[in-house]
Image (spheres, rainbow, N blue to C red):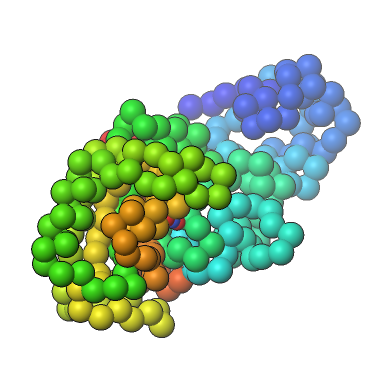
Length: 266
Ligand code: URA
């Protein structure tokens, strides 16, 4: 379906329709390689290419990426000291246009690995972080101390009921939401999550934890509240969508249409 260029460019953040009239007069705006001046020019976003002052505008659909975050990277787009997850993206994802639009959905700690979504789609972001939509995030955990069968049962109950976590840094103590599910893994089941990783636990130190909120250091604080400690943490699923096991830490790929539909339907 065609749309006027001034509408498209206004939507892409180039200002009001009046601003776009000026832009067309003062800057080179190319439609399929030919300069245009008329702000009523019709554009077919499926077929046409627009270049504004040398920069191609992404007229196509939103961008959706799945990254397996590597340890020691910061979940933000700027950090004076450390490498950020945005530094791991290829140059085509670092255009000035995308720098404003592409964001991550939910952060992971510097020492956490795993599933991170990058998108330009604010609707998806809202959906996945809104407490109302109740989307589960599942973490693979290696604990410092082995748990006994009896303590495992207690932890399951405490987490499910909503455990109280202590204050940390500037975050106050809090009650976690009820409904968190912990599942204990044996060595064989755990091995698929520690491929490509130098981490190793021992029997009774592996768990999968699903939580429906995202408090600061939540998983670490939950295990601290039951006298254990996380030594390795990796997010392996967001809702029903799981991290692609073929992505090595630091790698990313586009989400498939099916994965996007599933995330939208959460
Ligand atoms: N919980 C944590 O403690 N850290 C993370 O990175 C994510 C969840």
